[in-house]
Image (cartoon, rainbow, N blue to C red; front, side):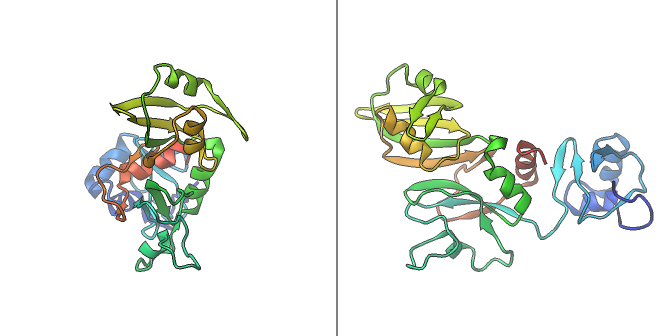
Length: 246
């Protein structure tokens, strides 16, 4: 528990600096019991905390207190490697981060032919948990595949398909659109095995032609242009913390 004595910074000042609310509104949040410090509801206005050590939640959502901690979304273009450096000078994620002052790293990877959402952060604890299979954070993909799509395919994929390295099943499957000879499908799964979406759809006779990751947990790519970086807002960061129990 953080020391409520004279050391540290007043909680309402910390909340205001983190962009949660004005100091006055932060005091109201504290009074209403909507703020927790290190798992304990705090109602006293004079509480001081160490922003570098305390874990603060407002309405159950973790608040990032350290100014130098940043999490971004990259819309990784097709053909770009999910590495920070490539000896063969091929395009890689690190090329887009050279001018940033933080020491950032990508969370997991997308293969070169897959586009879409790749998280980039300097929050080591968050990154570790997001990549750990035990937290089962869902990931959403849009895949263009040969059509038509049989009516029972979603049921088969939810039940599970046996691959060479073990079974896999999707959390959800949806047909987005269908044209003669091809279809756009949405696949949601929390698996992290290599090329898992491509291998899964190929195993059921619908090899992937294009693949885009559109979401990790509640963080969505939206209409962000390829090759661009976007800083996550407080709600998005909070949703990632919540997904991995932080």
